Amino acid sequence: MSKYNWDEKHIITFPEEKVALSTKDLHVYYGKNESIKGVDMQFEKNKITALIGPSGSGKSTYLRSLNRMNDTIDIAKVTGQILYRGIDVNRPEINVYEMRKHIGMVFQRPNPFAKSIYRNITFAHERAGVKDKKVLDEIVETSLRQAALWDQVKDDLHKSALTLSGGQQQRLCIARAISVKPDILLMDEPASALDPIATAQLEETMLELKKDFTIIIVTHSMQQAARASDYTGFFYLGDLIEYDKTANIFQNAKLQSTNDYVTGHFG
Image 1 (cartoon, rainbow, N blue to C red):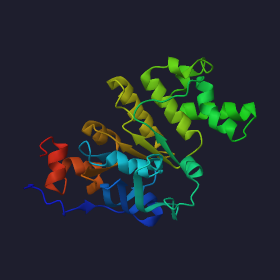
Image 2: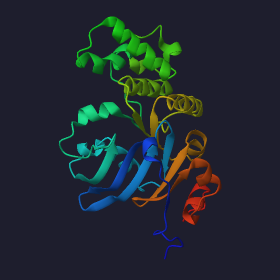
Image 3: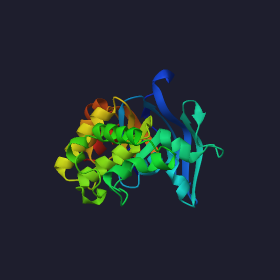
Image 4: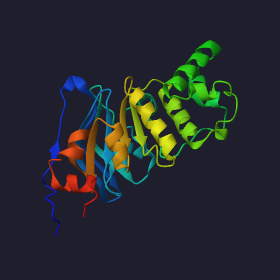
């Protein structure tokens, strides 16, 4: 028998004008398996929210549902509401590709295109019909500066992106994602393949980016969540158990299960 009362929850909410994105009664199923169990959660504008929990807790599944990446999985079914600017983007008539321009994603491992650094940024814009080189140049410089990569690559823009280090590749992927000016940036364990120096640089970049974007990050690193996020949500077996300011989660958690998890005494 569990020593925790899993029916007990502590989940903060925000005034409507501060909410960038929210879910209501969100369920995710893989076949008959319910991976996310009716999560209600709000994300504050221009803040970093970390999603933590043991492996298999559903945090990455939940994150992927926010811009409907789970649509790519045949056996996945998502019910409930995903509310962005008052619109439920989980409705079937929503143009998913247009929606993802507003809710972008950076994945666990860097996935640059096998193209030049420059074309990694411009590719989507060129496909959308942007041909003016001055406009493209400006998009490249602005997004690379925002991702704290410009000074390192400005003389090598036409070299292959695959020649960059892992940390640089990940920041290029961030630059590519933010080049279309999304409101929200989803990050699924973006530092898991990076060394400590590259991880620290990524966290510094995130802290700068939140001036312009709302960031939601899944991380297995308690230290990263404590350092880089404003709010933290603790997931367990598909449920959001506790959601609060990061300082409260790590120093004054309301629930014993949360406290035990963040201090390494969970079980």
